[in-house]
Length: 203
Image 1: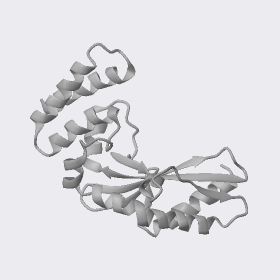
Image 2: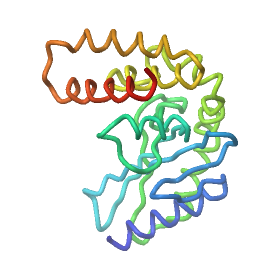
Image 3: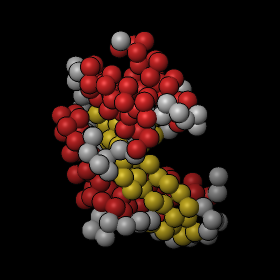
């Protein structure tokens, strides 16, 4: 790892720690109570190294109970804390566009990291606070734009199961199975495996 990359990540983690984000199992998490935690990913554009490193923060929300079920039912999930919903920080800011913070070799990494953390505080934390409430999340998660299309048919049934509505969860799965019935692509194969395990767990 380059010295600028090490310095940048250390400065960002230190600044974000002031907001309660701590590194756990390779993820920066902020405990929100109950099953919820805030999540931050630091996407790095490294083509400018060793003189320049750009950081594009992504903020999200993780639910431990949903993640546990998803890991049980899915073969293609990373075995580390992951957000169920997330958004690049720039799209939560006033400009609603891609935004990165630039760290320069020999520059003031701590100052840039503090600016990044300040933007997380102002724009990322309201997003996290809103969706880390399970009732708000589960009421809105089916809305357009909240989940990627390939995630919806896996996440929504689990949300319904957690909320005690297994029948609706099964209905969503059967609908998606019909939609991909004639497909043999990676998603369709993965979904059939997911559906089979879902039936085994929840009937």
